[in-house]
Image (tube, rainbow, N blue to C red):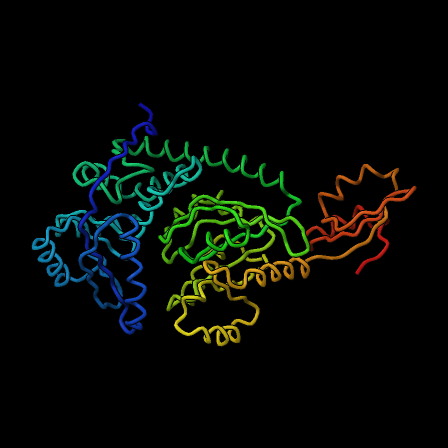
Length: 431
């Protein structure tokens, strides 16, 4: 039976769990606790019922067991008294750490990367997302194969052990390597098909939404495009890229893309496998970075998104920061303070539809500043160039006479050289 046919959907009760983290000595404790709370949100999204949290302040995690022996004993006592089935750790654990901790606690151990992969597995709906998630899981599990697949999936099941659907995986290393190669080939084909779709709309202006998970990107997309898109107040509500058409204030057609949210300590396997989804960001004309300004540590979120974009080598795109959820600020007057701190940004509430028109004007400004205006006259005998004109420019207006056509055009910076190469002799006015 093919591996992909072994997925079996099973509904389970929420697993009783605890969360564990190491705080670096000297770190801001309040901030550390706030960031640690995110692990609980992830656990809740995965379907776990977190009944207690444990943390320890160390210079660095302990090599063999991540936390100290005393803290491990404390956790073991709590587990036995409360019938806990799952311990979730806030960092990626080594196979040795997982083995040692599991041997001591005698319950299922899951690290942050495994938890995020599990959430993605639950939420993957399309063929592309399922393929990307499965590839990431295979690459993550490969060094953990002996422990994870010889007994964990059989004894424990549930969070951290499922593919895109509940799964019992009984394969050896050779088959896993073969499966990884097959998934990579499958994604290459998906990449090619997606690339062809993008090229088919090549002349349409594109804006890509990026941001920390749950920043409100999907809600903002609905407010801008006035279309129905899936919205849920959960981490990673959107995995697949969603694209919708809308119009700039000058009437020009444009496309808005919503992509998977980022998060701190996002597993590298996941970023790599989602390359086809994130290609929408890489190939967009403009990036719209959505920030949840109501979050106490939104500056950390900004930093995470910027670092992730850098890892993806997306560094040369015009970026507009959009601070969302201003309606949730304790004092609306704080918007003025943030406006002074982030002068080239805009502040909106997608949920309350506040400042959406101003945001669209910002989009227009972005486009206008990155474009060059031309008037050209193209004689009818050179009508074969019209197709290239449509590919390289945005045509604002066209006026015909007995000899040819006058065009008012906008040409984006990256297409300017190619445009001039072909149409230099036909330029009437250049602004």
